[in-house]
Length: 160
Image (cartoon, rainbow, N blue to C red):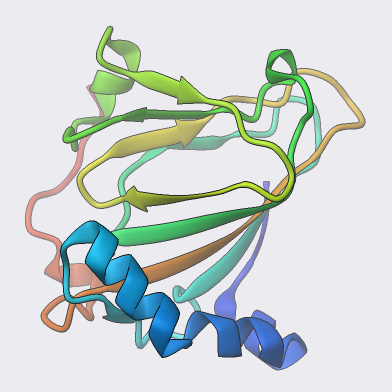
């Protein structure tokens, strides 16, 4: 996986930074999530571009430091058999739940997006299954006023 951090995105694309900070978008996301959503102060973490571009590329099991992730698909495999699927377990921080019957999968197309309560939802992306396909997403992270530091997440998250 190739990742491009927010500081470079801000320098290269002021339009993305402007969209990220759009008050109407932030208010809408907060209303949907029933949180007082605010931007993340950390310039690296606020928006990130993740690109899976080689067979076997994946985004491993994790939860996020900040509560909300708005994920926008710039490219996605057309066929779910090609991988790049979101796997998630709602209301579960324990990563092993991704291997349980409660886990779900979602296939997305280029142009799709989703809002994830990413700090309380274990999630990962399945590996790409063949050469020549890509999954590129722009991830906008949002937080609450009292959670501006990644160290404010309470319990360590362990796999297994």
